[in-house]
Length: 166
Image 1 (tube, rainbow, N blue to C red):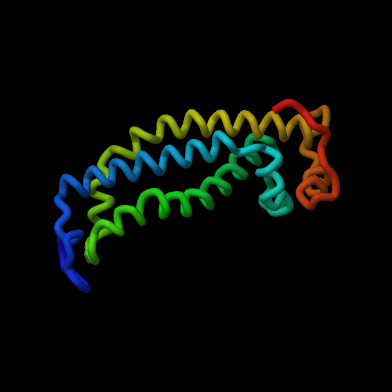
Image 2 (tube, one colour):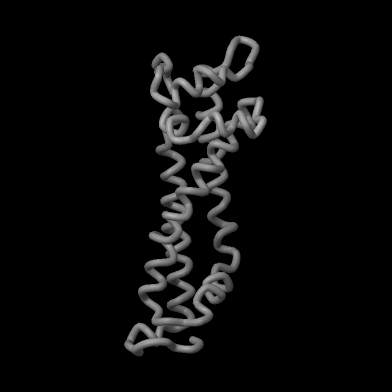
């Protein structure tokens, strides 16, 4: 499996088929957790975590762009932790040092991520709709303009929107 570093033990002799199955299982865990992460995300919690004044500075003016950027930032940050925990670490623990470890992982992923992506995109769209509805209900005027001051006040804990059904 490539150049070995450090002591050799029984973990050094994992077969290609076993490694491929570990990659498949790791991707399954990764996507299950990232989908569950999106499904459980509450719009108010997301708006509390992200900095709306940065989004305003980026020139975002419509709810759709704002929602997509908020979710993109959120999922990027959470994916790094989930990927390491659900995918890389379990596989790395089973394989002694291998100079080509990450190259092998990429090769063994094959088309499996694409298969999982469809389910993720379905949940992504639900999250966009939930957040969009909440954002427009709580932080937009009758004409559909985002009330940035109200959003910043909410984010900083200065005020809370009225409870609405999500």
